[in-house]
Picture 1: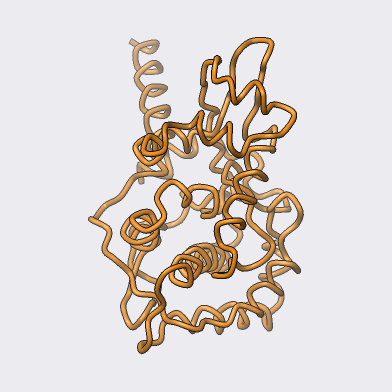
Picture 2: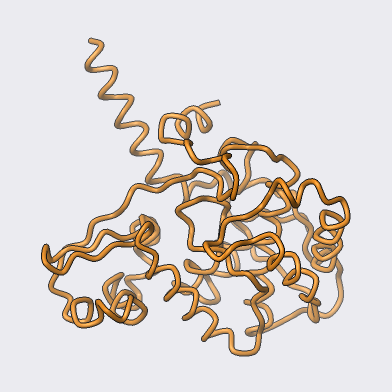
Length: 275
């Protein structure tokens, strides 16, 4: 009986881990994005507190009242009503809003071991955009994915160690496609996040490619993305497509430069979602 209980517990943990990124408690709604948001302050903050690996100095940021206020003031631009952004300005605004609201949410609750340790991080409509309260799911699933599809998945960062690396500058409408391509190249070139084994005819890639399979299938599947944006030294291997795909376990530990999130595991993820 004990062995059976352990087995069922393991199945529950694995199932939760694989479904976590896509879980939602309500149907996402479309979000409006104000036009002419100024991103200079946000870029300054990212360059100050985000390192080359995309990890965040939350402790330093939390201790600086001026920079906390600067982030709040930056995000207050998204709350205003009036002229609405369209096209690539809208897409860049959605990316910046999602990432910056996530940073704000973590800083409001820091220290924490994971975004999943906090209350309803993705579905709660606690963020203000164009006069409405919206959730992170509204921004991503209700608005950004319908606009840019699979491109979404390299640029949104939900404060986890297995997320694509957080960029150290705001996304801009000008040249947005190349910025997204650069984000994919940087993400796929990280051996802790995606690995390639030509001799074994295998690639071990992020579970994001599994969770959002339908988005990637619209362009021919994950292998098309790997061939297009994967590390140059593996180009021939990835271009050939003659290999099996495996999906790496997702680390939901906080993307902190310090100790928080370093030892967060599947068992804690299970209990964080249970209670």
